[in-house]
Length: 192
View (cartoon, rainbow, N blue to C red):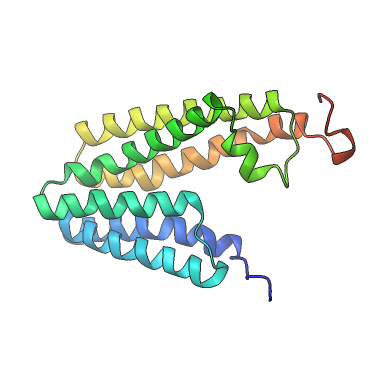
């Protein structure tokens, strides 16, 4: 059996950013309901492409797609844009709760996903995870503040040009911590 192919970083970025960019474009050209329907369709397409190429769907894209379909579906069915605007909040809270819940039951989700490429002590995995929990909570609060106090176009622009870059910048800001505390396999049992 052959190993499944991997998406290139550019394709992966397009699958994550593309649906949001399409949503913003349709919001500016049409309205929030048309944009929501197109967003839902592009999320399904992104999941389909990832599954076709890799034979799996990443947890982040999968959760985001399910929330997009549920919250987008409620937006269209009830003709109420609040649901699609709350989707990011629900996603951020879901990610924060999953990470914190994992720590509570001594199952570090970050460690489970990344320990094959990043070797940290359990304490450093906990610190990194709590930082992401705090980030996701802050992003949930920010989304709530923006969608409740700004126009649809401003909120969508914030998602693409504010929240997305903030996520990349936060991830990049964690690299020095990870590099400082990374250890090779031969010292896996020791504190770095």
